[in-house]
Image 1 (cartoon, rainbow, N blue to C red):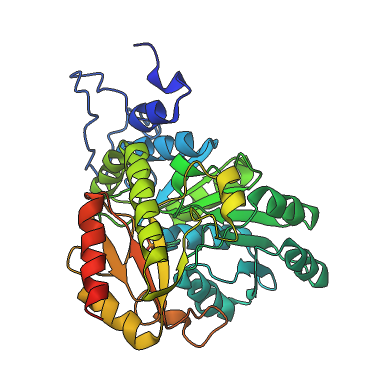
Image 2: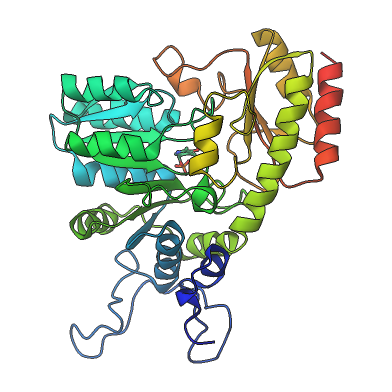
Length: 386
Ligand SMILES: *Cc1c(COP(=O)(O)O)cnc(C)c1O
């Protein structure tokens, strides 16, 4: 094959981008490079630019190339976690006195990072419902923001924001538009093509896909911003280790297949819950009654693997969360196995009592790729016991 990365298909790029066979041995899977340092051909004579493991590592480069190819961006950077990627981006862009305009149901850790870590350094944060572009425009008009930051679909309420519309408004106000694409993944949604400036990922979730590696990433087009974020990756040091980078690369190769099955299973689970008398409300963009359904159908390839549901009261939600067997009660999401979460006391405990607090009647399901009949049987039995 000539250069497989030149093929346009998403699935082809997922498998091949950054994954050239080893030129010395022909090994089809590139080796994992554990070396922390690189021999120099004379002082300063670096081969391929590699010098020291924090500044660069070939396994990390392979992942970063793959990430950029998937999101259709010029540059990819991988970090030790999603929050490390966010931290590098925020510190690359913001100065004391700047503000971030944040979606009102972003990942709790993102809010915590800006409010509690960057806040004392003089960074402000305001939150707005990003589904309402008039409200966004009014907020940007009232006071400038350096960054507009959105998650769509959001966590845990699966709100859908119009990325192209938001990018137009943000750019008109001189802001950098950032999309956390962790829930959709590039298999289902490509924010850069819709006008966003930067895509953020917790690769811990669907990109890794097997609940066995923590990581984060940035993908962007702007060369100057890339240099700043790369400088922070090097100077602050929150890099992905070689084994983490390799595991993430391996997970990404099956991303498109997994997302297709996650979406099919989640659609069936959402429809089942929607019909169930003990469920008060289901949040899933694949349901025709979801307020963001039409927009999601337009900007996403399918609707993803996360379903949230409200029960009659908090006690029933807690009991439901504790009584499934196949859906395991655990934080996180995006692995091949199905997980159950009670956001108010688990993933979203850090935003209790803030503007980002979530309903106490809510459970969030990360629908895995198991046999869908088994998943529904498990939920049905748990609901029958309430
Ligand atoms: C998990 C998550 C993060 C944080 O990523 P870590 O890898 O846990 O640091 C950020 N955004 C979203 C949407 C997430 O789900």
